[in-house]
Image 1 (spheres, rainbow, N blue to C red):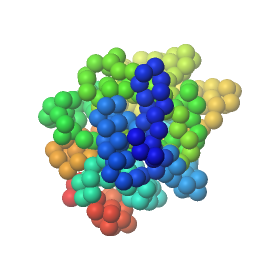
Image 2 (image 1 turned 120 degrees about the vertical axis):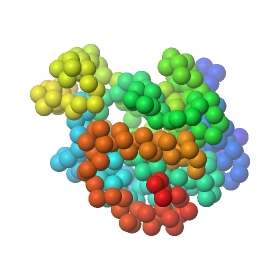
Image 3 (image 1 turned 180 degrees about the horizontal axis):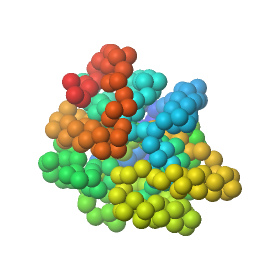
Length: 303
């Protein structure tokens, strides 16, 4: 094990944490962590000023725009809809991690990015099982060529209740109950890198929030791609105010290897954004982002 990483032992399985990007040994350990577990954490990739900039950007944008889903707010297609985020997708520290995993000159930015504020979650995979038609056309669950990885950034220190939780090893199986449950308590500046096929969740709803989600779904006639009702949104906001809940902000975006699995994922997410009503909320990918990624040797989909 290199000096840049450590293992947190929990009942015989580990969460691999890296302190910084290192040499070939660290790269191999990162790839092994993704292969075995489907996830790892890198500490202190971003500065507090950078996280503060992200927080301000998300608060400003989602305070005025965005969509109401999962009792919170989100902006799909944020790489295009929020030009102020451009610096994070070409961040040298993040791309150094991605290049350690995929290799120099082998990184594709899919264009996918979702930003969230106060959204609740359930157990799911990000590989499209719940989406009509799915995200992939090939044998993605078993193919070693399916190397599509998300970066998750939480813009506040997390607690066991509101952190990223995953089932280790579940990126190799379709069974949503398989895997060893582990929680990542990330701190400001950390990034989480995970395989889109891994089963995971964010903050799960409590009984009151479950009731609000169920009521909203019933009124929307079971259609999960419809925005939350305004009345439900107001009720949830009131509940959080009375319970003195803090705002939770996060950013998710995706890179992959230059092959059909990555391109399938990118195309399918573009279609998802159209269904969610986000595709028209942009003027295309910001030119400064295209230039920054090109200078880092990163391919952009579509080329």
